[in-house]
Amino acid sequence: MSIQHTSSELKLSELDKEVRDILERYAISPKQFVKFKNQFTTKTADNYIIKMILDSEARTYGSKGHLEDAISVYNKLATFIATEDKNNPIETIRNMHRLSLRQYSRLGYNKVRIQNCGAAGCRECKAISDKIVDISEALKKMPLPNPLCSFDLYRNGHSYCRCSYEPVAGSIKTTNKKNKYDYSLFRKYLVPAAILILIITTVFYFINL
Figure (cartoon, rainbow, N blue to C red):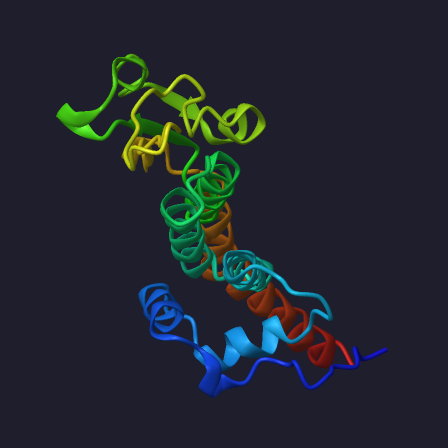
């Protein structure tokens, strides 16, 4: 059932410059913002609408398998939460890392290495830097973002862990390669042999008629 709106419905021309500037920074169309805003019959904070738009976009990309795009949007959402809301974006960052792990797994990797943000990193994050973990284990325990991180990037009273995963080059899965190798042997030797046997059998059949 569609929501009925009153004459107080927001118009595109009513968006002030501050809102338009924020939408531009986060690559959100003003029309898209107005459309979302007008889905509510009660007054809703602009920040909440923007978070809804970014979260919806990230989830849509993720459901369609466009993981890199989803990761990018979650990164924008985390920045927005930290800078505009002055809140802790840990759950959003966790979703971003979850997609990164899925992406590396889809590319064939088994393991990832934790990387901190360098000299600016906090002591807690430096302590886990270069740690190698199985992707399956990382997806279960989600070590990133580091819950002990004390780096307050945006000076809002909340930590903002900037650690990341990088795939371990030597951990490429071998299952697919093995299957491909086995299939190539079948195509190279067994199929021609089967055809040759069929020809010989046919020839002998007609000779013995």
